[in-house]
Image (tube, rainbow, N blue to C red; front, side, top):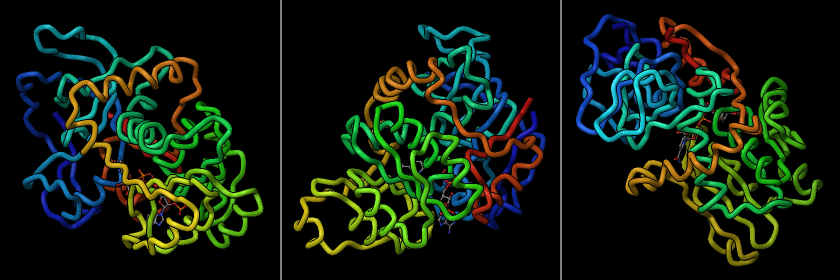
Length: 319
Ligand SMILES: NC(=O)c1ccc[n+]([C@@H]2O[C@H](COP(=O)([O-])OP(=O)(O)OC[C@H]3O[C@@H](n4cnc5c(N)ncnc54)[C@H](OP(=O)(O)O)[C@@H]3O)[C@@H](O)[C@H]2O)c1
């Protein structure tokens, strides 16, 4: 089968597409015929050996796919031919991929394979972030950084489905358009976002996949009792916090690590999918797909995330 391969840690440009052996389904795994694969920021980091999880070289990147079941373990409710979305550590940018059965989710009929491939990583992460970790309530205001990206557009959609108001922070007009398409009520530029958010009444919760030097202004954008959700550091720099800012207004800074939480609790990811499912079936959650590229262009897809030109979610079409 064809698969993308990371053979050296020289970044997206060094990613190739080659013929490799089809994966062998392990105990408790589901083998999926991949129709589409989501491209995520951690895979950019992995292509340079900069992610916490460092697979042995060479490896096939890719942590989320949508497709149909080829084989499922005994006792699984899944049958060959079922439409699914799936999460796996690696191996998604390929014609077939194996995933742990508890991380294979039924895909509602109205959700396309391309949209399905955009779901596992970002939507399960924002479900944990806005739900258990962030306690976002209907009527509250959510500020979203990197709002035109994968996590950003997913966070906007889920917040709107939960009845919150969303202020999106973006660095370009195109990303602002993606944030609006996801349902953002207000879109403000990165430069001067603090003043703009204050003029809009401040935020109850901040969803931050970016980090870097905007962190302190994010804290200052919060209303009393606000929560800042630490999701990632696409800006590169890991911020530090002066804790007096937390005391003054009863602010929480909350870590959100989906893998650390969900993968340690069998059944948790499935319960998250059950909570997302009505919103998928109603169309309230409908990923903003910025670009689709064939598998052969895996390198270019990863490069678009690294050079910050990607808008919305980037997906590889495999068949
Ligand atoms: N904690 C978890 O469990 C978890 C789960 C999934 C993903 N993540 C993390 O969440 C982060 C976002 O992932 P994503 O899929 O949303 O990525 P993405 O689609 O590439 O979006 C990230 C956004 O970050 C902003 N950004 C600011 N500075 C940047 C820079 N120097 N380079 C690239 N982007 C920059 C960009 O928005 P602007 O240009 O508008 O600023 C971009 O749209 C990643 O760090 C990822 O590892 C964490």
